[in-house]
Amino acid sequence: MLQNALTIADLKARARRRVPKMFFDYADSGAWTEGTYRANEEDFAKILLRQRVLVDMTDRTLASEMIGEPVSMPVAIAPTGLTGMQHADGEILGAQAAEAFGIPFTLSTMSICSIEDIAANTTKPFWFQLYVMRDRAFIESLIGRARAAGCSALVLTLDLQILGQRHKDLRNGLSAPPKFTPKHVWQMATRPFWCLDMARTKRRTFGNIVGHAQNVGDLSSLSSWTAEQFDPRLSWEDVKWIRELWGGKLILKGILDPEDAKMAVGSGADAIIVSNHGGRQLDGARSSIAALPLVKQAVGDEIEVHMDGGIRSGQDVLKAIALGAKGVYIGRPFLYGLGAGGRDGVTRALEILKRELDITMALCGRRDIRTIGPEILDREPRLEDLRV
Ligand code: GLV
Image 1: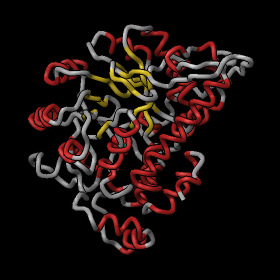
Image 2: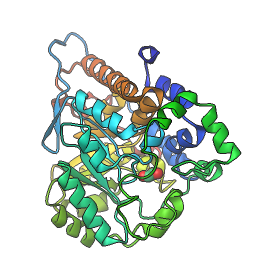
Image 3: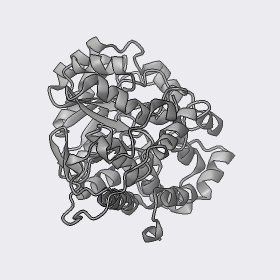
């Protein structure tokens, strides 16, 4: 029963039982030793909150804004690849849950459901995440499709021009659609609800790409396809080109270093996302929450700062807001909710985070998320306490 899930960890356990191993592992993995993946979560636990008492706790609000858009809480759904393999039509279900909850949904370039699928099944604008490929005509067409679909922001990923090595994916022989070797068939056969739902949809491969891009090689293997297609020369000049081509709100995802953050201020982007790609790219990089105060110190209020990586509770959301993020993104908590129970599972994940965020804010003696700053922390985290 989804209602029995009280934490994101409960949803993760349920997703593990319902999603074939290769796809569950794709979500639950980091690069190489997974040290940065673990640090993203563990560093949050080192940040302490101040308990305040005898303050009025009535009329609390979590409503805020991200890039000028109203949000019912400052949490957006992160772009995640292969989401329609965690659950049939996963991106549509996620976008619908986010829309009903009043938070942004970001569709990945490497999604199973296409930009047009999401537009046809939602009523409010969503955000689109872009990977830049060598084929610039294809990038232009992707940007045009996002515009035609009414997307209200473009999220440009900067930290994945070369794919970090995730051992689990290589060992599992991950692909979309899945292969039909005995190992893969066994993984699927032991997840009958997943199979039933998947049998009812036609969306089983990369919907933004198949049938749209020219000269596409073997797309089913993400690692060989990124190596073949993604542009490893992506530069600040390209960011400018994309900003002009898009002409709308632009968010730069994957900034971890204060020097890069300063460069982003001059790029004309509307926001940056402090991110190490969920620990899936440069293993050994510092955690996102450790990077956040350094980036914030470097850019001040010159650009809106968001973060992702390691958020597993509403308490984590509050800590990130206290350290200067205007909003955060959830990737794995979203996927665990989706794998656990489709659209209702995503809604459950959002409810869990919202409740934890609300109660924590109240016990810190505060009523309005928009006024939260470092003063709610027991002391500002020292860098040496975090994993650097
Ligand atoms: C793609 O974005 C991935 O991290 O696998």
